[in-house]
Length: 253
Ligand code: 13P
Image 1 (tube, rainbow, N blue to C red):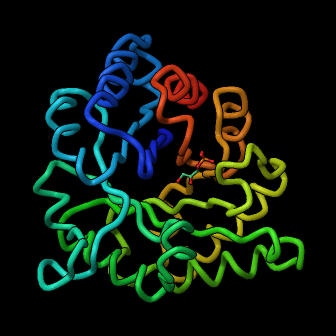
Image 2 (tube, rainbow, N blue to C red; image 1 turned 90 degrees about the horizontal axis):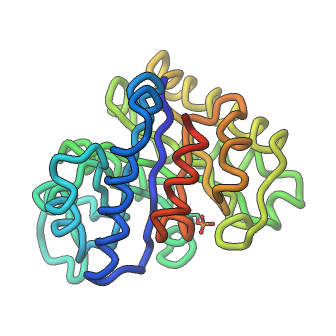
């Protein structure tokens, strides 16, 4: 199955940043047809909520998918400052990142809350990208597999079975640090995540891609993407510059 490469712009990007997204779309068009055609790489960009609609408009007709970075579990209501899955969908999003570690640690998001947001995403027809990952302290205590397995079990609602979604393994200590796990460490966690997904969802859990995220760059993308059970990448900083993001996408072909 083709890889899924998604850029997470986090809280970065004003109007002028749209040119980077347009350059990504143009760059994809410029890749040899067999790279995208036969390998079937899917590419997405998740800008801040304020840019979702404009990005969707300027990428209309391109192969780049647009996504949100979070959503509320409810469709509407008295939730000042929040955005619902339905609102993201209306704005042109087809993807939504949920349970990112910056939301788990900064906003106290629990596995149960993440699971309710996943249900909301499905309700609105969005494809959720559900994030899990251990802290450095948890890894050093030998608990990485246990922590990530628990997050997967708690964050995946049963209704996901048979619906399109992706899981993203993002070790907290690798995010924005330039550090990456060894390929053996990535392989170990991805195998554990796969086993847990299959245990929770049955056969459909064996199919959804498991992305790796955390300091993915053009220089390490091809190696990471070749690891067993790595079905793509979730890219932060390097997705802000079209040349870097295209370099990562080239590593997925
Ligand atoms: P970096 O690629 O900047 O390390 O961020 C990873 C991430 O958090 C993507 O969601």
